[in-house]
Amino acid sequence: MTGGRHTVPVDVHLLAVRDGDRGPEVLLSRRAGDVYASGLWHAPSGHVELETVVDAVVRETLEETGLVVEAADVRAAVTVHHRPPGGQARVGLFFEARRWSGTPRVVEKDKCDAIGWFELDGLPEPMVAYCRAGIDAYRAGAPVALHFQEPGDAIAYDPAADRLALVPGHTDRRAVPEDAVRAFVEQAVGRITTWSDVSWARAESRVWRVRGAEGGTWYVKIHQSDRFHDREVAALRGWVGGLGAAAPRLVAADAGLRVVVLTEVGGRSLHGATYPPEEQRLIFRRIGQLAAAIHTSAPARPAEGMLPLGKLERHLDGARPNLAPGDEEFIRTVAEKGAHLPGVDVVPTHGDFQLRNLLWDGSAEALRVIDFERSEDGPAVRDFVRLSDAWHGRPDLLQAVMDGYGRPFTREEEDQLTVLSVLDAVSGIAYGAAHRDPELVERGHRTLARLRSTRHLVGKWPAEAWQEGTL
View (cartoon, rainbow, N blue to C red):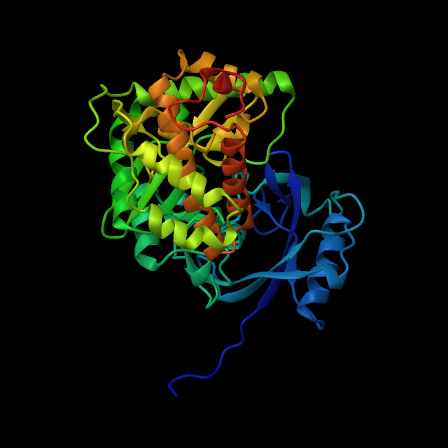
């Protein structure tokens, strides 16, 4: 041993977190007077005395803010190994609390002159770099962080001299993507402090919402296959740009990693959302307008092949145990007639144009669309297959879609839509049964029951059935 053991000071910090109107908020106070870091914002904190670290953070919080936090409500947040610009290294234990009693106030007026709540995505300036490092590590979900400042660094946080280094835990690999993906994303947009997995439950592709150290929000997507990656990138680099603010913009893409970085678009997914009837009709009119913008983003061209019937037998094998009596006969009858339908022109299509991929911003009355990994040229009605369930029994919503679209479906398109809807229902039931997704199975059942209830076959369904919203 070349040197003796050294004693490392231990201090504690409390991150009192509450839900604000625009996201989580944290309580900070501004140091003042003849104290260290005067004029800088900091979390309630202090040194550990002859007590446990939990008792210490409870005590310091009461002494500085007047809040009473029970020890049972204290949660470990992150541990930071910190070295100030010209002092001894220390260990800081950051704790989270979401329950307390009392109203925060300035208690130690000789040490603090202000206190307030700040969005985690909008921290105040100037701020103690050490505290900022702990909050950034907390937002990123890392259990341990290193923050060794260099001589000459400022006490206040300076993005140009950000010394934070995250140490991932063994469980973090499931919460954030691999190192190569994280490095690629940070090369594209700068250091990321928060990775939030927002993947759709039934999707194989993974999606994260990420927030940058200096503000900004992006979405990072890792595709399940090269095919999906190539489709989404081609669409984003091609026709999607014509949608303007109604779609995200591609920031960066890496084919080897199958990753894309996308700008954020505002709005709430229409999946599971409810609105008053008048707003519903406005939304569905916007859906029609957006579909028209997609389908006219490139010139139409003649179809090169028939409807995709090749996978029907495989899907039937998977769906058969869950089909109702008479379903298979109906499916085969529709497929047989579909094999002889005349082709229709093909245009750019979204491919998964359904409520969960449509975002509504009510304040701006604006509709946005995301997720282009199934985009390809095809018949325009392909994009109405998964929407038709949303307007079933609501002729006013169907009319709103058609008003926005600018024209009704042709008879050929109605027939194409029927066949494509049946094929989608069968594949949905097969996939849902195999992956224990009852919602997908039920949607397929509803589609088959709805189409069978018309008691007509392809080529004979009256246009009135669509106009009444019964198909």
